[in-house]
Amino acid sequence: MKLRQIKRVLHNPDAIFKFILTGNKNEVRKTVQIKEYRKKMSDACNISDKLLQQNHSISDIIETISRQIGITKYPVAWYCLVRKNKPKIIVETGTSMGWSSFMILSAISRNNIGHLYSFDLNDSENVKNYGGVGYLVSDILKENWTLTIGDTKEKLEPVLKKLNQIDMFIHDSEHSYETMMYEYSIAWKHLKKSGILGSDDINHSNAFQEFIKLHNEEIENLVEFEEIERSTDTMFKRPSVGYFFKKS
Image 1 (cartoon, rainbow, N blue to C red):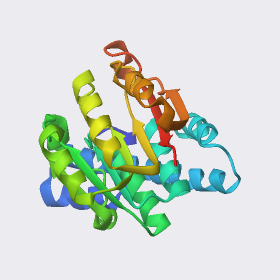
Image 2: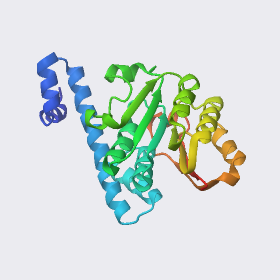
Image 3: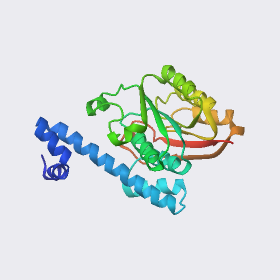
């Protein structure tokens, strides 16, 4: 290991325990990385709370934290929306490693109210290698979390029907037009008035803009923003994020 990597391990008791237990440097690296990611997200939560208390807008908070910490913007947006609006039932699709889930569940924990229902295919080999869908979510946050593995075209509607009414919906699964429009439409039927619909990667198809046109009279407080620069920007266009409220 390089000196910098050794220092990271020595400051992480979990990593030391993992190395003693397995002797596997890759497992140690994963443990260190997960703890650092969680620390970064917890810092983002703390800064968000302070700025919310000072009545900063969510848009300003997103930009401030992305500059200070370098964290992707969309989990910060969901965190602030949950902290500010205190939704009871939140549904998200496309959990992956769990950035959004961690932030949403942190907000739920601090609000002392709410439950998150998440959906994912669990088809990413990289995510599986790190421990599976939502591996960033710490055990202490999981008491307010229900994770469903499977295609949203099969799994989402039955859960929404069982819940009957939801307070917030977030799309971040497959970004095809068909999947995005399907998820928006089925969630909209169950989204209560004054509820929130949010979506990552709204510029990957025309679904988000078309959905807004279809429901223009029922929508208010639309917000859109571009994500921070990422290494994948050379392969894919830089994502944009959007959310709006259902008129009461």
